[in-house]
Image (tube, rainbow, N blue to C red; front, top):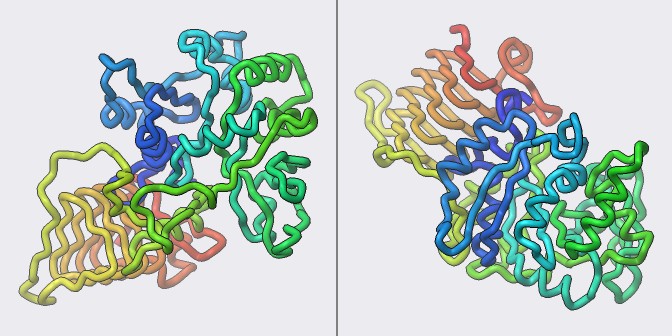
Length: 392
């Protein structure tokens, strides 16, 4: 919040022209998997519209990306959790009859070749494979933490967001975390999902309930994300993964894009990230009679943007935005169609879609003033909600 006040998190804009869900779907499509269903529930309208506009695959080849809302197929209730969402959509599995099912979270920033993960899954013969990555031990309460035996990929223990976790033997300050990406053998997934649905004490969650059940049966393995090789990745941006579950992580992930040598590189033609593109003219940089030439550096500037005699540094400027003369932006994320008035100062902030920032306003400079029209994150990032018109 407030970026999810009007939309599901996977529909949150990112990186100038993308939505968060584009990364997960692009990974699957680039991997050759093109029968994809997106299970939706919370404030899904903008997500539905984005999928319909962006992800029109060739139906003649049997390919599709389609959203599936909660339909109450198993009774008068919405999805009770991620596992229940699968359980309520067994009809989709029956239609296709796959041997394995890939289940990916829709709100992470990363590249992965899912073919390599499936190969590893089939090689181990496990009922479930969980993609894992090392994260700082101090952040263990944000992830499912995986424990494996020495020289083995079999998961011995799985703790969902523990308050404290034991570090890795070779790196005490790190833990092995679940990336929220799974591959299941279809038969086992359907059996355990049906069994879980009968448990009143279950939260009906893939990470919190299904994976621990499979671990207890010795049926779960981990896939080491660092073994995945994506064409076009370099040593600097290989194996990048970020869970943008907070305002600060969302802001940091955008800032990762604008470095001179980015930590996550959008410019990889061998593994493109696909998205919907509005029919807008190219970005334009205009000198102003009073403030002179624009100064733009280390920034992503999207189509339809006009920067007129303003300074833009270390920032992401979303589609169709207009930055007027004398404005000074540094460490800023503008979403689509934002108007930044003359002589404004923006620092360390996120401005949601269709916001009008009047002339002379300062955001990210005075925390007390920001509190009047912003949400301020624990890391000090000021976020202006969608469609706001800030008072001069």
